[in-house]
Amino acid sequence: ENSRTLLMEMIAMANRGSMDVTLLPCDAQILICSYLPPNDLLSFACTSKSGRKMLDDGCEIVDGPSTCRDTALLIWKALFRR
Image 1 (cartoon, rainbow, N blue to C red):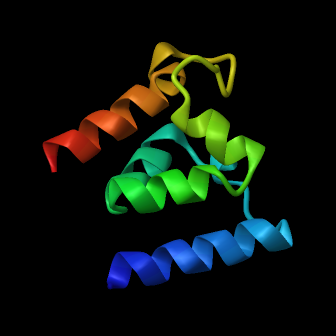
Image 2 (cartoon, one colour):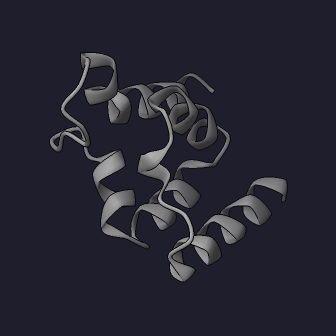
């Protein structure tokens, strides 16, 4: 229930344009997303292009170290471990 509330707050902020998760550091993105159930994470990814890019390992979000380019892989890996 707590994760559902977090998801709804994240979606509301994204819809207002006041939050772009991809601006957070890679480790923060992984930590935040690893708490959400997979279906909620997919719902969040459908709310914006930046959310979709964050979860698509075929898209590079930033030109930076490989750890930032592997964010999607690490998010999904954290979900499968949980």
